[in-house]
Image 1: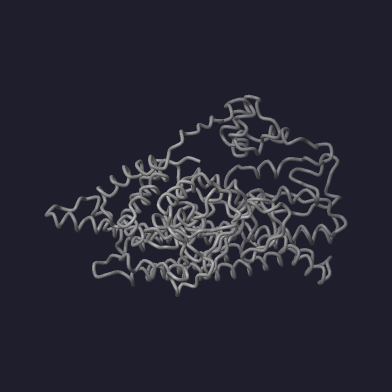
Image 2 (image 1 turned 90 degrees about the vertical axis):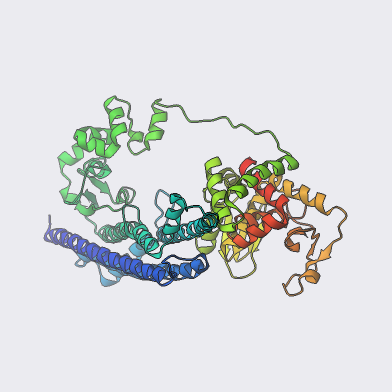
Amino acid sequence: MTPEQASIKRATKAAQQSVERLDAAALGELSKLYRQAAAEIAAAIERYAGADGNLMLTELQSVLAQVNGQIRQITYQRDALLGEALSQAAGLGVEPLATVLETSAMMRVNESALAFVRNFVAADGLQLSDRIWRLDRQARDLVTNAIEMAVIQGHGAAQAGREFLARGQPVPIDLQDKISAASAGKISRETTDALLTGSGSPMDNAMRLMRTEINRAHGTAYMMGAAEHPDVVGFRYLLSPAHPAPDICDLLSTQNLYGLGEGVYPKDKIYGVWPAHPNTLSFVVAVFKDEVTDADRAGKETPMQALERLTQAQRVGVLGVNKAKAYDAGQIRQGMIRAPWRSVQQRIGAIKPDIKPKIKPAAIGLDDMIASGRDISTDLLNKYGSDGALLLEKLHEQLRAARPMMTEASIQNGGKGAELIRAASKMFPDDWTKVADRHGPLYAKFSRSRGGYVDLSMARAGTGYRVFGYSGTARGGEGFIRTGNFSTSLHEYTHRLQHAIPALDDFFQTLHERRTSGDKLERLLDLYPRHGYGRSEVTRKDEYRNAYQGKIYSGQTYLGKHGALEVMTMAFQDVLGGSARDLESLVEKDREMFDLVIGLLFKYVP
């Protein structure tokens, strides 16, 4: 080894130690940031507590606004911390090559490494920006859901408790527990735990991302710089002394697949190997051509041969317990080493693919569906009364017990608009959402403008489009939503379901046709002069709570057979959109519509 090569080796080790210190410092700052935000969120919750120490439903939106502001602040500060740490890590990566690279080349490598880290697409299809967005969404969902559920359940329980007291009966223990769940102190503790505590918490995931990307930035810059040295033939996958337990890294750091030595990979192969998993503590070290021995070249092996050389404990760490047993039985082949166990089970014949026959339920007519919904809704109203918040809570509880729910729609983009649509889609049965996903790609944009949905199902393939700021060439089934709040999101996502499942909308169209037969068309502009409706927007208003529900569309690219496309959307919005007042009003003024929605939610299978 030449003096220059030895110098690079020493500088490489020093840079690795510097990165470990950088990692520790960044994680310390990140922990401080999340803990400070959790304390400020808890203080904000306490400020809105009533005289009894509970958060009132009337204060819910104010509290959530404060909480979301704090979470946005986490985002800004964390992203700034991450950006600075990545820049420093990449700088440390090229530092060992300072004696052989010109300053301009080091800057170029540094910038290329940072671009690689930002644009890198992992096996799960996500880039760094996607992972950051998921972090923010997870934090918002966990905290806001904890607050919303506690307050809404507490409100409904308090209402029910007052009714017990009015009848001179004691309040049941379970109701008392739900009332106390809305105490500001308890909600503060739960939100703090949700943010900070345990594996998989937002803070834990943020720290995992920080460590992974710092190491990736450092290693990538180092490999890009060292690859320009004429004598570098590859990189050694080096385990950290702090490597906690056997895993796939034990195999990757010992196998000699290319005759370059144990754990050494050619310059063009290392990027597919290192890092092997998030939160890795491993490093890479340049290997010069004069380090490769005859024994290394003669020791070239396959992954299966390398696996055989490992200890039993290492093999269990690499393969997992089940695959290790299959290996001992001689059932594992090379392509199965990193495959999921369930896939391996099918390949070795341990289980047969789980294919269940699809059973199409018998068709249910409109009147039967309404009658079915009436039975369910009558039971709900008898048990819980007409309080909208409590009714919605109990309705969704029964729905989740009756059929699979809570699957999020697939959205092509990130951001607040997509977040709102995903939340809205969880209010519907899973099989509805899955049909809508198969309909085509869906995009969602956040905007304070009037909500809207545009569907390109009937557009000719290859036709150019520009919708809500999105542009491209139609392939078929594209949908675009513009929304600014949860209620609007639920309404517009229902339009998506309407286009994806026209037979579902037929129930509403048939009911509308029956209820408005012979009614004249009226302009919405005349009925609501100050609402900004266009001159061509017309309705058959029937006795709907809002005449807009009977709006007639003509010349629309819609797969269904009718044109009153707001009947279904406004019905579901009233029931699931989160407004207790709208739900109470629908039950009171249009019980038939309420019963139809309930019947479909529980009984309709596309």
